[in-house]
Length: 428
Ligand code: AMX
Image (cartoon, rainbow, N blue to C red; front, side, top):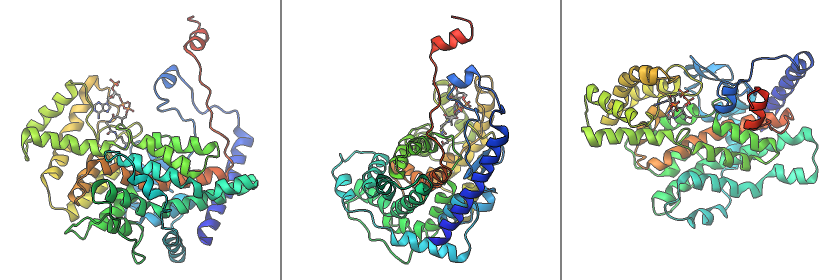
């Protein structure tokens, strides 16, 4: 991984110089204000951290290394990993080197399997993924080197080492979880001739007639790779890693946040929502019937899964990329048709719902991803967020390798009490 490492080093040095210049000239410059609403409202909209792996523009959506979704969605996960870590796409030899490194490190340590097999049968696959990763912390090179007293400036090298080890094992781990949780537990062997995404598809062992499954998996793993620094999972991983907890601890913690229904679990919730529509209205409901169903859902105090976003204020380009893919490769199934009908109906309804309170009435990536997974034969909804997690770990690893390279300090905002606030506001 010489080339990847050299380019990560370059990026860290460049960013380090930028940060030094910013701090030297503008340390005390105010870039915004903190309001009481920020304190009480989950800090949404508060610009309080820096993340250079990716950026979410409220209108244009996700940018990775300066590339928007249409520009990077045709790449492979390996290319995206390289881009996240270095800010540039790999040349051919660097990509080959990275692929070889991942192949060499693919094997999940043996002790992980009995741990996963001994869990209760109804354990959520996200719990299994999080535990499987946590159990691999015993192999952390960073942990070992830290205990030997390596200097701070070398922290990133061993975070990168751990990151590659972890990422390389994800196809085998995630596919193994699928086989243990939903089949007879028999694992399918890794195939050295296949790439990272193809191996995941291969080891899942799903009998699918459609040869575009691997292309879809590549797209899925690319589109979910990162979504800047403040979302629940990335932020959690970052906070944990800032205590110099190794990447296994950090990734496992991030995944626990991703497992929430307002975050990564939304993709399974979306498909469930569509299934409920079909259960009640039949397999090809009309738009008017869908409109009434959505209104009923809102009136009962529930959210419409797959719609809305804390940062985006337009249709998520990742949703659009999946829609485009489905138009090219998938027959229109009743579920896919309902995804399109919901897209035609929901934004109009959410725009006026609660007096226009919903900040973003448009679909996010989860509004379609689960339906496509189902199309390719993945019928176990509970598994969907595992695939989201496999992809998102690319972002966790890149963010935290860079953070270690920049020697970013422990994250520790100050909290206040109601009493402090009332005193400050002069209302005690
Ligand atoms: N359906 C109904 N109401 C919604 C809504 C939706 N899809 N999205 C937002 N609202 C409501 C909120 O519940 C809130 O109501 P409240 O003040 O009475 O509690 C109000 O609109 C304002 O919320 P907001 O500022 O627009 O959104 P937010 O930043 O608080 O939350 C999100 C963002 C994603 C949690 C929210 O839009 C939501 O719950 N969406 C549905 C779940 C979903 O799709 N999650 C996936 C997000 C992407 C991801 O992380 N994978």
